[in-house]
Image (cartoon, rainbow, N blue to C red; front, side, top):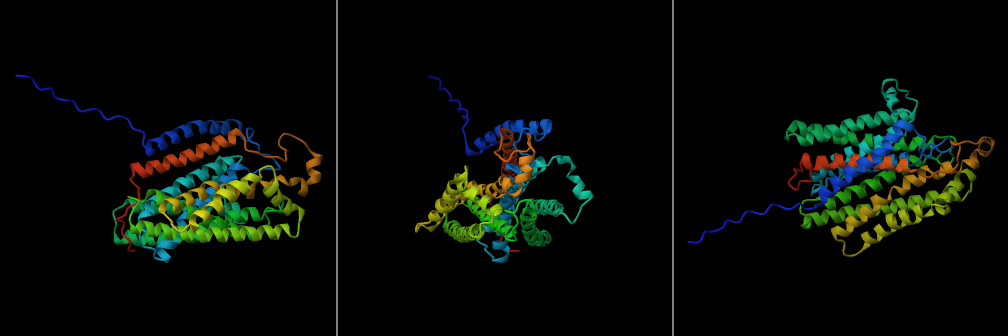
Length: 401
């Protein structure tokens, strides 16, 4: 009698999935970017290209960009769900949006904290605040806003109850004016710098607010299209199209506001203001505005959103192009107005020369590495919350508040 051989089950092979690739990219980015962190603590600001004439560079621009994403996405979510009563699908995005906002806030605080000459002295602003300073208001608003986000995320992790729903509702309403105030104050910090006439404008805080709404809507739309469970169904497609129409309207509004603002600056031709804008448009890094921002970040998304057959994938592509190229906006706001210091302070520039008195600026490798560290840290926080804490979008989320 022949003996039967029992087949042993094959061991599952290791497979590269998108989440594993993101975990690996985040860990590698954190380790490589850690070189910039070590340089920051050992050598201070010497490895950077910052100086007396150009004290704000890549880190400040990235900070503003991250604040726009963080505040804008949550503001638009709260506005649509709680004010305009978009109850289809959107409430199920709450947990992931609060997780994303906290991850982005962590990136922003790392960059702006390490941009300070003595980052560990920041606590003085909390214990000895000078309320006449806009920096004090910005730091306090950050702390309060972070507490609100942590409270909302904690409630989302708890079993639902009537009392928790009421607290969540009031926290959502409170987050709207706090977020707006944070963006406006961040814009006002630039607007009151007397030594940089290109920043001095009462419209700059409003421009920051509009930029936050555009970038935040782009992030919200991109995440909905990419992460919604199943990514199919009439409700999913209808919600994606509504978000695409909203994004299209804000993009066109932002384009008109930028064009009008540029004409107002160029028409009178005030050197200290017009030179900065001319440097942005026609300087050595003209492609940052014309190709990265206007081409891939505005015109191409508008074309994708104006097509007759609006698929969710096309809407997500438009939103992704917008948010990944929108960093060009704060870069053009922060850097060029400082590079025209020779127009504003020509005598001072010619009188003294030294390593930190350069009127040129381009981010050094150390600045890019520290930025990579902050971005990788935020990515790992998001992945941990998304997978370990299971803060994923839920199609069964209760929509009554």
